[in-house]
Image (cartoon, rainbow, N blue to C red; front, top):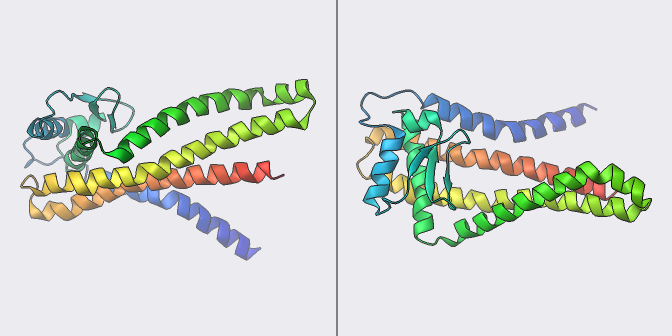
Length: 227
């Protein structure tokens, strides 16, 4: 019994710690810096212009920092859009890194974009099917109907797990092959380069946490399907 409890606690820690650590790092370096000449939005605008991407807008959003390939826009949360912190400028450089991927035709980004679109459609279908599953089972009076609904649900969770699996290398490329060299090119003092790397690692860990959660959901669903 003790072994089972310890195993459950370790499993919970595995799923909880990456996200908690990432939030802690981002918060720690989110303090305003008087020595920074501009906000995260201003820095993103500067980097985009320097890279010949003046047509890419920098917008504020309440849906989390991201680059939108469909709109070709860099979007920052209010704290990073307006803030003059190490977190703000580092996250801004990371999102500009995605814009550079798009400009360069970086294949994994294009693959992720297609997968996200497909997963969103499948997720909507899966949600509708799952809500309708009891009615379908009653109406069909056959295990085949229930089996099909379970399969759709499994595919929905599987698609989410696949998106997160593809997302992680895309995020690492945007952070360490694109954002970090820009930050190290005289924009940050040397003392800030190591914390900036930690921030970029924390950004990646948010996707590690999401990947673990998606994998857990998929595993649970597969366990249900085997019953």
